[in-house]
Image (cartoon, rainbow, N blue to C red; front, side, top):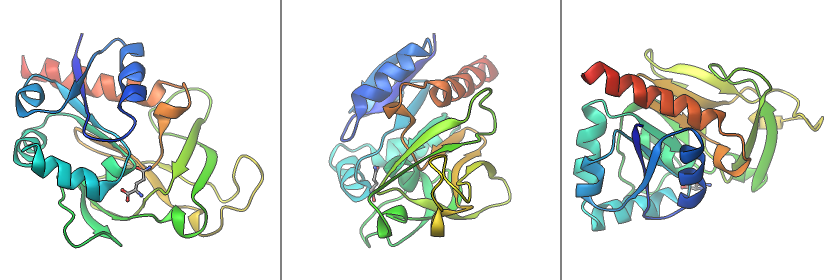
Length: 211
Ligand code: GLN
């Protein structure tokens, strides 16, 4: 089974670990550089991106993580994790560090400017079957994507509850660039493991390509 880590400095680590185990991965929390070196892929959970970027510095993980992502280790960022992977952040804090890997401009707390949380069903490219339930919690959205970035999901104009999505309508909320996947929402909170399964497939492919 592929070994998939969850960055365990902050955020909802347990939920990601169980979603990954549910997809047949060997899921492990990652707090140290030696643990990072031993995984085939890494999930960067939601939480608070500024705090997480500070903790990455304290735990001396910033450079090792940038190096592994640059070297093609699959990474999946949810919410704050998406912010950390983005090449540019709007409404970020000046001391926030970026991991890079994803050529997008994200706006931090974009949904939070209207309401703290927002939910809808989404069509998600690469996820078969029923739409994906997306829970956004003070979430970012993507305002600009680079040429190599695939858009996997956008907010529909009317939510599945029949509400006008307002400013969120049409916003990009799931993207992939090569071995990097990111969602503005939290699939680990809904019990639907299909987004994690997509990531586990990306990890399996990367492992097979290295053999
Ligand atoms: N608002 C948070 C941030 O800026 C992200 C929220 C989340 O991960 N649920 O980092």
